[in-house]
Image (cartoon, rainbow, N blue to C red; front, side, top):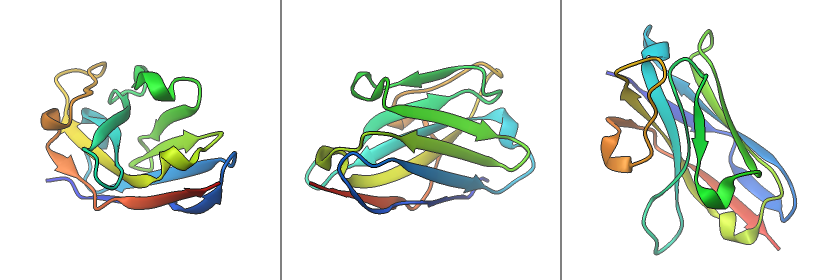
Length: 127
């Protein structure tokens, strides 16, 4: 069982940057692939970024390439999402998710693939 707690959301201005954090419980954090998703009002939860357990492999939604960076610190059981040049359309609840990976280099982009979810952190970008 993995418990995930996101933090770092808030109200920011368009063009600002923000770093979200997701702290995980447990001793085997490095065996989990991690992902970030977001859910805007009236929309389905969508993929933002994912990272393998080792941290060596990352992948991003096409809309986020060049604006987001996902990283992890396995010693701290934490995964991060750095977002730059924020836009009002980035306003959403951001969730982190974990999945027991089959290898150190596995990553997952579909929400149905993930086993554990955090409670989410609200990001609001004003124009």
